[in-house]
Length: 511
Ligand code: ME8
Image (cartoon, rainbow, N blue to C red):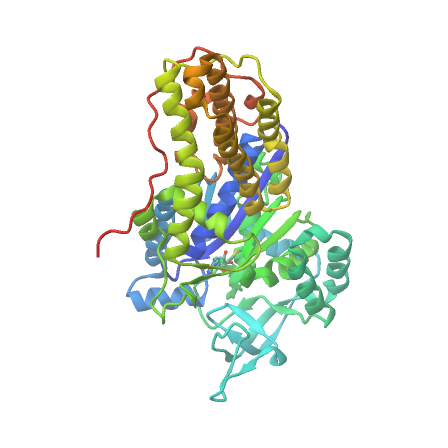
């Protein structure tokens, strides 16, 4: 083992059904988790659901259910969505579980014992949809004169007794953190935004509510429930056994990577490190904030009725094409648009043409002209060695990209090799060598099979099921699929199964 690696997604609110935005973050985390496992790491990949708070309480009421019954239903739908998306999480935490309630309460007690919590009264703006407090000067006035949160969420004036966290006392330490550990918030544009927000000064944070009951009771004062964000952030600790630091899982803390959407950077890059500092706990390595999907050019929203269930896309295009599209289309960290045309283009050009055809052309020639067994590596030319050298660099090059969270660039590295293979097969024309020099033909096909094996191995994190099929077709056994295994050539003479297309072209159904 090369060490431990702990990666998380946000835990999603159960006030609504899972959608493509949730699937996106989770597939991205899945790619990182699968990549690190194949590189030999002991990975802990955490996800789950955020089930407390007024927003969930109201959604349950609207559905005519007790909050817990409502949360059970939506939380299991999230798991079903993960199964449909082939997300390989190691643990799924629910904030209503006893282990989480224990962890969140212990975190609170620790922060209180260190003198960073006091009782007061909160008076100010609150946006229920964001479960977030806003300062007066952050509000935006709409054309009709109403004031809303910068996210567009309606705000209400709240006045109630509340416990406060001394966030203001941590501003300097936070600024110091951003400066001395620039990798703590990525990409750097987000770091600058967060740092300038903190530089304007931080106010103490209201961390309890008394106007509703659906939450974790504040330790020692059951009149209050914890602010849902303090409750939620604690999941990253409770899932690894906190406060039981003797738990074997505690070894995963601090987390290597919290993947979040840009909407919740403030919570993860300001509140979370401050809470951890106040509790005397180690800080995670990196909060990475990715961009936002629009749908056919529009913001995704319930009111527009354009919320996309990823399972519908999978039903139409297939699972791996959708996973590929999500990782390929959006430069990781930027924003992007999800639309049918773009999905179909990527499927047909990159998957069906570039990779699918290459595999099919190569493997059908091996089946027909090499007796269906892996040819010898044979005497290789400079052209052969150049292609193989490019493929052999993939594990190192891609590992670098994944560690920079450049998931899209990681794919581009593989496609460089795929394109090089296509140029090579055209240049070498093994179909012509069949008559003139069958020995050379076999060497060329073997070079291509070896390059395809490297490509298939590296793409497993992105498209696990399709690459399983490809690796089976190139003769790689179950224990020959890690990155390290690429260093050992597959034995010549091994029988290959009959080749089958992996990526069919998408043809629009007749209207
Ligand atoms: O914020 N494009 O939960 P949430 C890309 N419970 N990603 C999107 C997206 C879009 N259009 N819409 C949503 C919460 N997401 C809290 C988190 S963590 C301790 C608590 C993704 O259900 C993105 O990851 O509102 C975003 O951060 C997350 O869904 C918000 O999910």
